[in-house]
Length: 123
Image 1 (cartoon, rainbow, N blue to C red):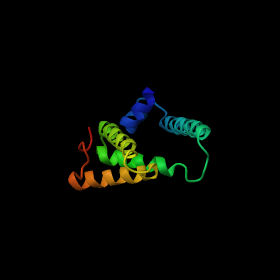
Image 2 (image 1 turned 90 degrees about the vertical axis):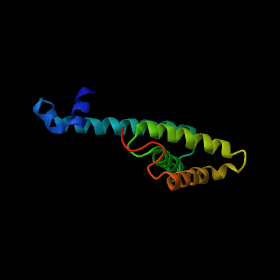
Image 3 (image 1 turned 135 degrees about the horizontal axis):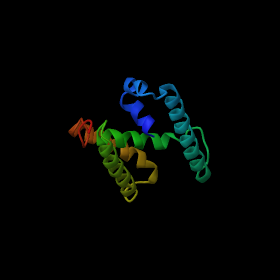
């Protein structure tokens, strides 16, 4: 964990400090691939596995990050709450097939009013 953080902050300084940067990068990718595979397998257990199954997850996630402000993790969290709540509340007015449309329309409206998102830039 500390080696990963050191490499993420400053590769040259981590290398000079004696950290094997290449090994840290490889193990970081292995860890990320393992966690992603585990998440995909768990999601596949509760839904039907189809080639396009991630499409309806990626678009609201993208809308959440854009809505909250690119580069701001707190903005992404706030954006995901706004998108998630608006999608679920929209089912009272529209059919559930339109949840994705609501997320994208909300993103478009916010970007027209405030192009940098709800929160600005980086932390």
